[in-house]
Length: 190
Image (cartoon, rainbow, N blue to C red; front, side):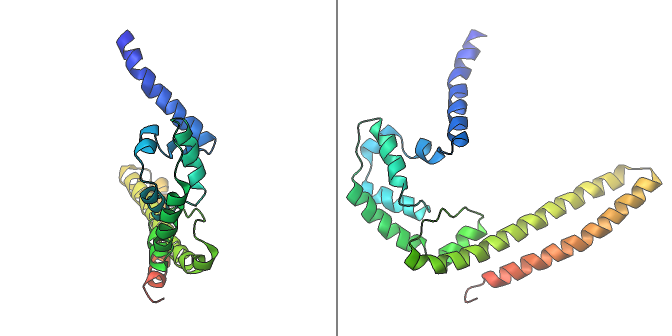
């Protein structure tokens, strides 16, 4: 039994650390880089990777704090050079559409001169993502009501469930239309 407590100790501490990071909004700082990653980093590649993952330029400060624990100082010039190259590739309209369609958060990382095209397509992608999620929620509710319908023997309950399903059919048809319109607007050249 004592061995089990020891085995759970590191897991509990890790879970507590993750909770603290989430609760304080510092997940970026907590997960920026490990000390070992800091020691072996190619700062240009790290900057490019961060930019391609949509992180703002300020992520370097999170990395600087994480690396300071191991006495490592990031090469800011290399990082920024990589970040600048990566952000130019990230902030394209095509990537904005993909990023939004995947439901990923945009962290306001694109520079103002290239943000408009990215944002327009990101928002279109996000509308398609949100429409699909709304449709899935309605379909899950429909499945739940159909299961209840199959289990109930009470005629009043059956009538109520049938009415709810008819209403839900209409809402699902609307949600499908919303998704179709969002997908249409997401097509290239729109």
